[in-house]
Every structure is written in structure tokens, then in C-alpha cells.
Image (cartoon, helix red, strand yellow):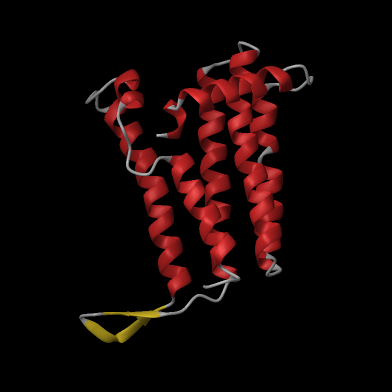
Length: 179
């Protein structure tokens, strides 16, 4: 899990302190991250994968920045975490959905070669399910009192958001080279 690497934690704290002097709240940084994601989605629509990649990387960096600014300004709150979570899902949805604009090879299931699935539709479905299921499982475990939020936060996840984004960045960078 990338969030637990001391060097990255220290780097994020330093960046948060540097950006904390800008007169914007952490929640404003969070909501602002939607803009490069929407532009990244539009760049994907225009078949500009590297432009799209750059904009989605910027949105991801702004997502990391909002938490660092919140900690530096001592603005950490449940409301901020809620806004961050909703914004994360929206940005990730736009990112995953942007793959529909690229020509990916179709594939057939081994047990039914007559049924051919468009790869981009299958990829989008699997990626969005993984993203939504991770969030849902965490929220539902807390809601059903299976575990408290601190215990859930300490558990290793299967491909947490930062790692999913890195894989999506790599996939998008490879689209023009080898769909």
C-alpha cells in the first residue's frame, strides 16, 4: 500500500505544507480535481491518449494534494473525507469510462467462442465494479459493525485506489503503442 511508505508520507506532508499557503481550502482542492478529470475525459473523446493521461495524472495529484493540505491546515473532517470520497469515485469513473473511446481488440470467452465481447466495454465494467466494490465493502463493513473505521483503514486492500490509478495510467500510456 503506497500510503504507508514513509518516504511518500514525508513527501506528501512537505507538499501539503507548501500548498497550504495558497488561500484555498482542502475541500476546494478536492472539487477542483474534477476539472482536469473532465478535460482528460474530453481528451480521450478526441483520441488524444497522452493529453488525457497528463490530465488524469494531474487530477490524481490534486487528489493526493487535498488530503495533505487538509492535514497541514488542520482541516481534516468527516465532511471533507465524504467530499473526497465522492469526488474520487467521480474522477475514477471518468477515467475508466475514457477507455471506451479507444479501439481495443475484442475477445471471445473460451466456453462460448460465438459470443464476442468488446474489450473496452468489458474493461470498463470490470474496472468500475472493482472501484465501486472496494468502496462499498469498506462502507458496509463499518455500517454493519463488522469492524470500526480504524481497523478497516489498517487492513490491506486488494488494489487500493492509488495502485489502481497507477495501473490505469500505465494502461492509458500503452493504448497508442499496443491496445
